[in-house]
Image 1 (cartoon, rainbow, N blue to C red):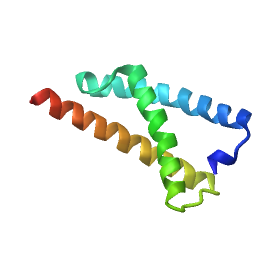
Image 2: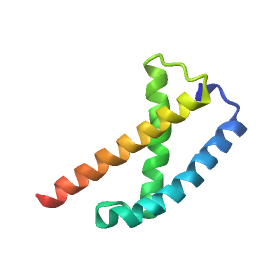
Image 3: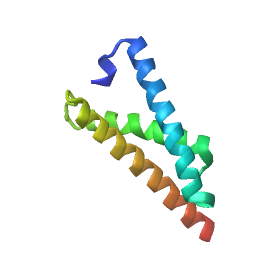
Length: 95
């Protein structure tokens, strides 16, 4: 789905997701504190996880023609990615 977009639409999608992820990353930086990755680090992780979640859903044959389903798959991917990295960071800090 996302790979069939024109380059201008793809860049616009990346920009919109990055801007919204920055707002969320700043909020999560305040909540997570030392367990987080900073505002910019959270933004990069959330943005990467969003598009990785969409890519994984497409690779499993789930066609994301509905925008609501695509957003749900992207958000699930971003929060799973952020949670796994935060858990691994906290585990490594306690060793």
